[in-house]
Image (tube, rainbow, N blue to C red):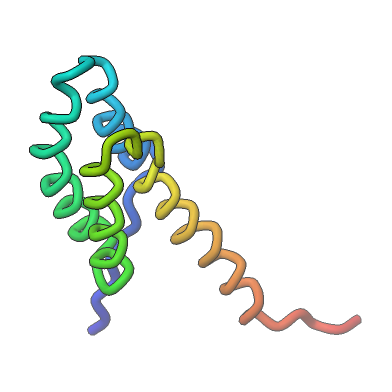
Length: 100
């Protein structure tokens, strides 16, 4: 049996990035909230995408969330596009095209 992990929805990824942006809404307090949100976000990232890409992405996400001013990077959404769109290109290369 293969263990296929279902990809998260684009909407989920956008919501997760939006939660990370919320720290900008409260000046002064936002950076303190990032200290709490960064490890939570990294764990969710790693569990959501799984495998090596989830762990690597989770570490990047943690650094991105903990560093002041870096919350602007939509790491969940970027990984969604890399996973879904880059994977689609690879699959199309594998399928042979019949010559006419």
